[in-house]
Length: 95
Image 1 (cartoon, rainbow, N blue to C red):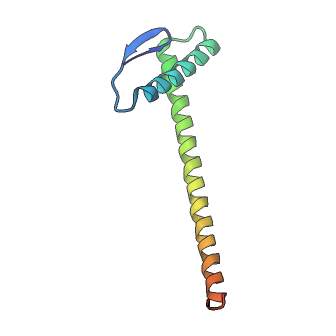
Image 2 (cartoon, rainbow, N blue to C red):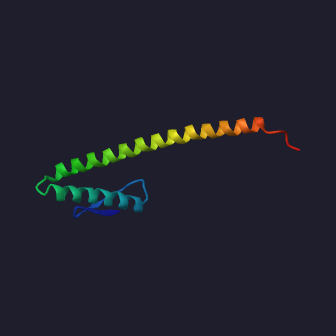
Image 3 (cartoon, rainbow, N blue to C red):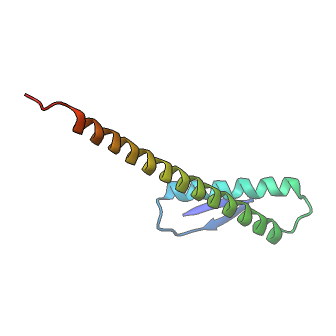
């Protein structure tokens, strides 16, 4: 499959569906173009490194957010289970 990043056509192979690979290439292209606008004299290698650092930072932040959310969901689930169990133990026997 081919994608275009900063005007360069690249042939890529990946274990992800083509639409995902296109999306990834688009994100990288957007990141590089943004950096290129901010640093017009920047060397392409330096821009690529900055883009990689920015994307890695976003990835780590997302991972941390996910872990926090997962922990909150687990804690809330335990609370709800305890509330249900307490309610069941207090409920009068059914018919």
